[in-house]
Length: 141
Image (cartoon, rainbow, N blue to C red; front, side, top):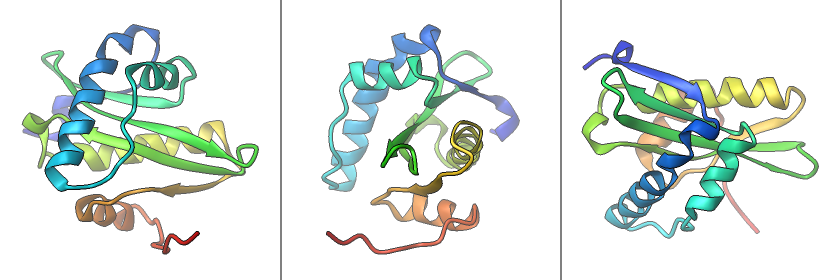
């Protein structure tokens, strides 16, 4: 499988029907990694799609392949690329990195003056973030 086997789009109203599947996969993935990632509702994911704050990926056969969304804080001064998930049947194909690239570009388009960061508990995503130029920082309260 190659990255050219996928199409990555800004999610919209026509993609809302995938919200439950995306949430289900996020939960399964978090449980398998033993992380305490907050559960997202299908309504939350659908709203991100309606706001144009998400990207969704499909295999050329039409199967849902991946997803990521944008979260903003402090009057859009800070933007996080969150909720990255790839359908397990398409993992190891470079799709996660391509999705992260597209969500970063969308973040820049929508919020050109913001500081963009990624939140992750996974080493694989940390590696992708590093390859894309994100700088690691610690989280403290």
